[in-house]
Amino acid sequence: MQVNILEAKNQLSKLVKAALAGEEVIIARNGTPVVRLVKAQEPRVHRKPGAWRGLPPPAPDWDDAAANREIADWLVGNGPE
Image (cartoon, rainbow, N blue to C red; front, side, top):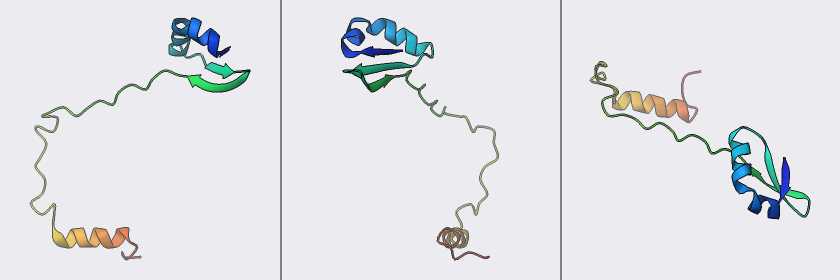
């Protein structure tokens, strides 16, 4: 559906309902499409405290300097072929 700006001002609630229902809503100025009204994205789910409870702990050498150097070398292209 395409409407001009004046129509959009007068029918904003209707246009929002249409966009929420998945309909494409285009707002035009002087017949030229300028804005698309779309449903906002759902907020990302934030991490919950304790989500990793019960998982095994990291290995004691998880932050080993030699391993970090090797990974860094791979990232800059100096790793093994």
